[in-house]
Amino acid sequence: MLNVASFLDASAARHPERRALVFEGRSYSFAEVLAMANRVANGLAAAGYGPGSRIALACGNRPGFLAAYYGILKLGGLAVVLSTTLRERDIRFQLEDSQAEALLTYDGRGDTAYAERALAAAEAAAACRRAWVIPAELTAASTLAGYPSLGDLMSGQPDQARTHGYAANDTAVLLYTSGSTGRPKGVELTQANLLALTRINQGLAPREQTRVRLISTPLFHIMGQVCGLNISMLSGETLVLVDGFDPARIWRLMVEEAVTYFVHMPIYYQYLMESADGIDSAAVRRSLRLCATGGAPLPVGLSDAFAARFGTAIVPGYGLTETSSIVAWGGGRTDRCGLTPTTVGRVVPGVEVMLDNAGRLSAAPGVQGEILVRGPGVMKGYLNLPEVSARALSGGWFRSGDIGRFDAAGRLDILGRADDKILRGEEHIYPAEVEAVLKAHPAVAEAAVIGIPDAYLGQEAKTFVVLRDGCRLAGDDLLGWLARELPDGKCPGLLEFHAALPMTATGKVARHELLNLNARLAR
Image (cartoon, rainbow, N blue to C red; front, side, top):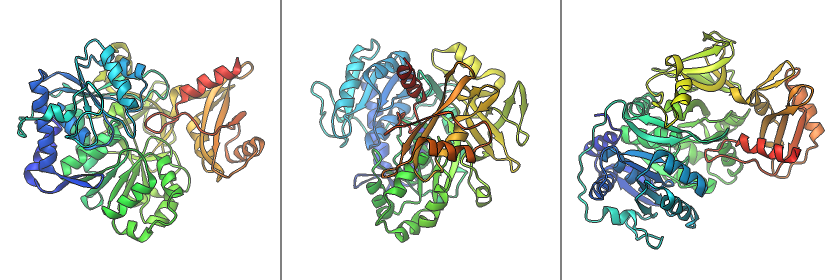
């Protein structure tokens, strides 16, 4: 059956009493999670929704996400999954762009500000007729006056429901790109995409490394959905869910729940290391078997330092929303030899990658080019953007917009975004290369490089740097160090220190905001 909700059906049939979910001290069996999803599906059907209905889901990492996500899919609906960090105008744009007919929103984390924004946006979106609030306790009353809760939607509904079968090319999930370089686009992922990539992910590591997955990366992100939620349901594993990133809570759960697998962006591993004083390393070592990362270069020395303390290296990977997650994976001990911060590993089975170098496709070592991806996870297209979709999917390949190269061992390096490339005179500068070197400096916590207009060179490279707490460093000293570490001509000409950098919900630097900031300062 083409429906990722069938993973939950099958695991509940095989292991009804096995722990499927742990959240804030409470465990839920596979049978309980399935019953919750079935009641949501039945509640939506009773409210007049059915196959093809577009239902928006804006929820943090809590049991209600699982109930709503699988409930929508079991119904045969299209799950429009929204970030929980959006402003009201962005929520409204995505509701209107997707023509969502209903909204399921959580009541927030600590306050109801997000829910109030989401509900106001839903009121303004013409197609959105109904809204329900998802409390932390699934059956609790709504915390927003005038709006029913998910518990109200589920109330009185049977805990058995048929799982709808989708056609291979039916859109099942709509995820909006993070907008790190501009306006978000709605990525249409089919059931065939999600089924295939969940199974590919399952084959990348033995089950003893993944039987208890701790997920604090947002479930509204493709990493959380495929590498956390769907694969746990497919494999009958336990999902330990954390809403938000709290290092102390994560370390505590690592030990209490005997976590074997953790995945997050590189910067969050840095936060974990900085918060590891007093952590019982031996207790973590007893269970932890695999740590994965992606979305940004892995800073020099971070994986080795983590492995020395906790016995497990951090394994890099590369994937995109448009490819339903993983494209390349750095697993396997031999693949860790000679890694650079931008190395993400070998292309995974079932996926093809070529590099477009001035119109010529190549996978030869050392050749740089735009990364093209072909495989079962490549999206259907961008919603309501036929011309953009046609360009992105031309020739049967997905054009990622990322620049890469293969090394002699067949591993892929990610050099940066094609549209981030800085052309300074005749010198081509890729921000990711410079940023990886900057982050190797012991005083640097975060860094980003952008291209700005220059009257003589066309563009100049400008660096924004956040220093670690307690560190002091002169800009000229850092630029001098950088010039010694980088190839000739690659060193940025300008540098600014900042207390923090603007970030997207998925932990990437929001480069368009840095460009806007620079433009305002230049006036």
